[in-house]
Length: 250
Length: 220
Image (tube, rainbow over all chains, first blue to last red):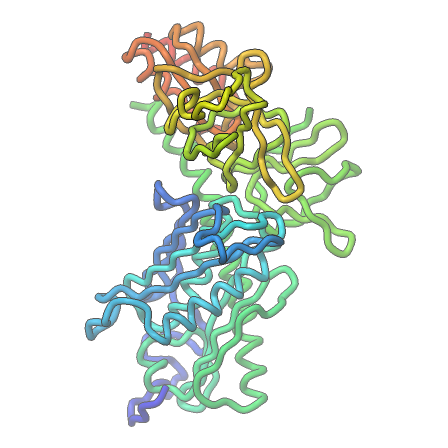
């Protein structure tokens, strides 16, 4: 948000600067089980975003005073690589990363059956390798795939999508330019089965009607992305059957 | 036994078809849903979800292989690859302690074949060495596999593991927690390790015993 400029984000034909329509998503690709050492992992490419997620646990929570005797604690860590943005980002957690870690952890906690694992922690490491607006939602979407890959009991797989307002119009899934020069950005995450909202933030200004329009748009897109998540997990087990046949032909 | 080969994902609705709700399934508003990624299997009138991945969750009377990670005055603390460590009390072993240090009996890093004796309400896992076949494992090699794949390695009535034993002559001790202890000539152990990895990768496919038989015949 913030910087106002003369840049036209939507042209006369109603197309955006990357040629998308107002309700069109960027291409999304998810892969599950990409890391061998972690209990579960996933990699997502969402437009220009590239995010890697690793999940460990449930394992005994350390230090001991962080343990909760009635349920598991969720430790999410969102981290941006120094090379993920144009200007080198100073490494390490900053105000923004701490906030995003917190909201992602809380969103995922809504879906996980934490009460099944008292005194443990489930650690989720979200590493943003390349950022292009919407990394918190991309990270969250990949994190649910990694959690499912780790076999952690969940009510459903959390999924999200951002929408926003550019040139006075509500559009879906902002890219970097639209995020920088638009009027509002509204990331939202839901539990697809019940459509409960588990994460909702807003940067910028929108009217009440516009928010409603944006939320409806994001929800619809999230349900679409939910299918991509599911396919990514199924693909992991389908793939091997194909490989095996390949070996036989040799 | 009717096996549906379809893989279900967390949050997917499951039609129980008159079966009772078993493991890995939760219900909400009268409907049933999976809470893990896995395959639905029906057994004894119960529909169970067999997970494709996940940690080892101890169950009473499971046979596991643990490693000593800490020693307390009257018990050992064992790593059994679950979310919690396991405890082995001196009274649950065939040895008697007359005030000497426990590390004279089992030292740090020692590997033991145990059974899960009791799981308390606060998820404390107590282990035991007092049963037939339970012992300290000396020598040999350790291979770890995913705990959810152990049942496939055992096979129906132990058919798979017995076939591997007969074919290679390697001594195999399987822990339900995914730790496998092997003893024998090194070249044979390498073959067994390769076979275990193969079973792990192909655990969700059918006709596994025949495929493994083929591999064993080829490598002989």
